[in-house]
Length: 500
Image (cartoon, rainbow, N blue to C red; front, side):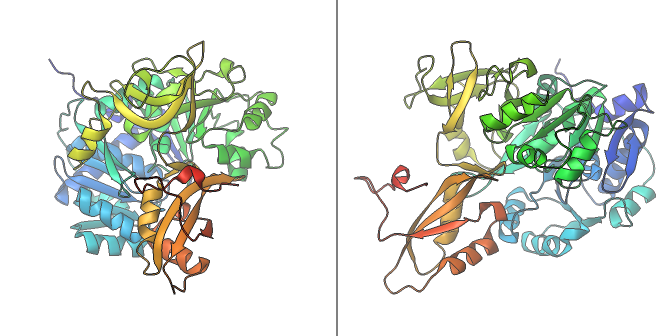
């Protein structure tokens, strides 16, 4: 007999109805599991009245809000598919995603009213609902007016719960399909419990914000405290608030570099913290050592949207002993490091990291060819990351196997940026690479070869990029060359482009 997915919120509403499930920092709202369960039920009924049914996609475009989690769980009760949208993207990027996923409903924060209206028009989305972080809105009215019972839609563990779009090396984003099985095993891997209090401040459209540690905490019956957006001073205040007693938080290195600069950091009381995770990019060793001196072991981890995301985790006790490592494999996943021929490399050698297990995506939405490329014949997933393993079995992510770089915790794929620059008439050729940056880890540098007589300057190129790309993807520097370095087959040799 196949196992069905469980409704976490309904379960905890029965067993611990008065437990605080969610705290929304922006609006000051607090919801018990009983109250959250009731809102999810009413929201699902509201969605149903709009025509949302099994397998329909429901998109959300807004800043962090406890409402986003309500949407996710309401989708489960209808058998619909949750589609969080990256609010940093430009309208043309959102248009592509919405045409690809074809959502029946778009919910949006009022701060994105203009962009949402344009995307809904361009992608022909039938229904739009405004949200206002607890204020008067169509969203709150829909919940208040909905009534009656709703028979839950049984979901198999293999069914798709969420589609999360990630940029690809082809320059077009791909929708990673996230199943209920992936969410369950990722929750098991995350090491949280009913007593865990998570501070969610990474964007919830990002797998780090949604799945580490927020969804696992809901699975366990703990409490999620949701920040509207990251602010280092507020972050410090919330981390050290004795009433909230935050035990878990995940950030990217930039967050923790900024936190360490806040006055009062050195004398702050972090005694309630159990796990302070850092991912999204390699953390500077000096930062890990700094936090260690304050009794805060920054625990590095590795994962991808496509892997649930948790694949590697470093324990607190090993954070300083294995500085630079992303840790050991999670319990239910298997890892390999292989060369370009797919053969396992020797211990200590660098190769591409492959992963296999119940947390790995079944594939990308509407991308059969991409699925063939990322999976081996026997089911191993190509991560695209270069790694090595030490004599104790600890893994180190040493570089990107391909050209992707990470800026402020966000993946940037140069091909996508290059395609935008190629749209300009005066550009003959261009290449984008990641270069080191003190604050963001890496930023883009565009190398441009102009056509004879072209009259383009830095501002023209960057203005064009800003109109087509999210801010974090826009190159911070432009360099002009007479020609790009190529090999004999014409491939650009990016390793020969200067990064200093």
